[in-house]
Amino acid sequence: MTEQPPTWDSLWINVHLATMDTPGTYGEIRDAAIAVRDGRIAWLGPQSQLPRHHATVTHDGKGRWLTPGLIDCHTHIVYAGSRSDEFEARLNGATYEDIARRGGGIMSTVRATRAASEDALLDASLTRVQNLLAEGVTTLEIKSGYGLDLESERKMLRVARRIGASMPVRVRTSFLGAHALPPEFAGQADRYLDLVCDTMLPALAAEGLVDAADAFCETIGFTPAQTARVFEAARRHGLPVKLHAEQLSDQGGAALVAQYGGLSADHLEYLSPEGIAAMRRAGTVAVLLPGAFYFLRETKLPPLAGLREAGVPIAVSTDCNPGTSPMTSLLLAMNMACTLFRMTPQEALAGTTIHAAKALGVADQVGSLAVGKAADFAVWEIERPGDLAYAIGGNPCRCVVNGGNARFTGH
Image: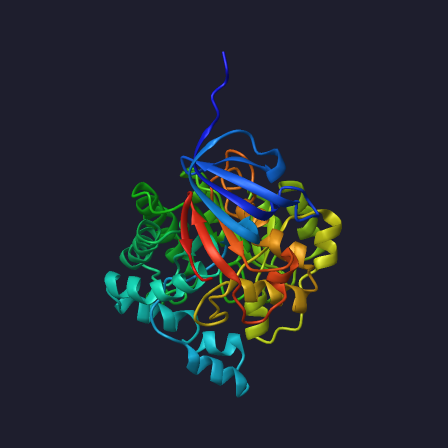
């Protein structure tokens, strides 16, 4: 009996693929094709090896490059208000710590976010999200942490879920109740963490609003012991953990999150060799955030050589937030990772695809081009994959595909 040729919903021909499925390389397949069925990749390979098939729609890529959809794995993109005044204050000599200690910083955004309605918060956030999607982003992490009470944290996470439901993007949420100490709990950090661990996290997890738990372990945030309380609460609810660690000082946060099998440790400018070793053993991803490094005029570089030597996966993200990285361009973050941190363009693309997927716990679904994975990819008008980290301010994205559905962004 003759085997029937496969039927595909769509087929892309005349493309070059950067599959990102081979460590240390782009995983290039030139003169290739890729097929989609039921929202997943059904076949890919050299176009000369295409089997007999039926395709409902065939797209001619005209020699463009096709990569996995980009993944922005660390954002605070849901917020209200602006902190341009703090930007100006820093340029006049104030430090990040100075601003935070006198009621600015995170608390400025908390006040604005608490005051905003859910619909207003959604409207304010959508513009920022749309900028990312226009650059090929197909998966986005969104943190809470600007509410710091149950209703406001719920409002933020509901907006994050609404973004995922209304926009062509996969959204993963992180509960960041342990982001800062709200004014109503001044001097009572442990009492506030009672609320975070015993009330907020259980309620929000039960409502299906939380995919992971996060915290800010820092001298102006929470101590390692207090952070461990959040991780224990997350463990009770079956949630993975991640951490803002070693941004301003070495608090041992990376080793702590690794102890809990954490998905990622993020920032890491002050990361120690002991922290690197712990992350390597746990498989915890290092998420580097060059936008905050640039915006705060930081001079302490994250230990890239040590991370490389240990084989720790390195992701790159925008850290989109109003106070320290008001950036909605993942391509710019990739360029900054190369110019400021001396990452290679290949590392930067891996950092916004396969390693970013691992940082969100979804590498089995997205992050590389492979049969069975989600048909999330981007089509680029470039000569080579390294071009994505090269041009400052350019956007060569011509089409974004989410679950097999194509959205053309330019010609």
